[in-house]
Image (cartoon, rainbow, N blue to C red):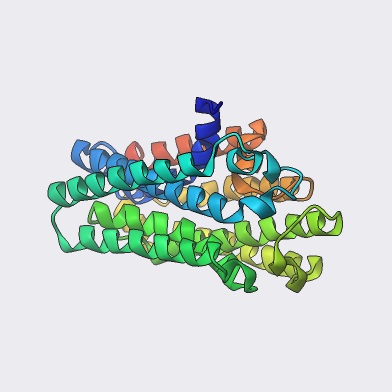
Length: 302
């Protein structure tokens, strides 16, 4: 009999942490204490969480036979038979209905061009992930690009729903960071392939050497772009401080700690790596508190 835990696994509740990226534009636009913007961002978080769950359920329905051959994915609710496919399809219908209602509410509350552009991004995200489930995941580089696009779309969506712009440097940090995460995930899946535990057809196109070199290229560029953002005159003018330059070492340490985990993680899944490392979570929390204090309490330029 299906349990609430099974449905939580089907909907991937633990992956909702990715949707916190929606709050990045709000955070850096000095709007965290603007109750309306905060409420709109929170609504956007719920909307994207439902959309992401729809994508996860669709993907699990499509891949359930292959997942049964995988040592860990075979434990997923659909692959293991804990949730019947018919019930998963009913769940999809309920989620789709809720998504339509909330998107309409978002349009009513923020009826402006940027909001409808954000809705367009939801459609793009959905189309990309349906394409991923139905074959694009088997095309090298396209599969990683779709994985990376999910992170970038979340940030752009968060900016559009509150009518804010995001720095070009931050956009580059997020884009290169997203590719770093995607390449790192595939890197560790290569290990699974070598051990006979991976079923992705695309893995035969990749090698450790290729993924390592490009993963760490993206890592280095994301740190460089973060440093450039922190010293950019537009950033200093907008935030009335250049104090973010002092967060560069901490940002680098966070990236290095994640890289250290990638070397030993079982499957390279970003959420598993972050949620299962208390030190990494602590470092991220320190960065967020420090950044919050810089943005909202330190308003003088030395």
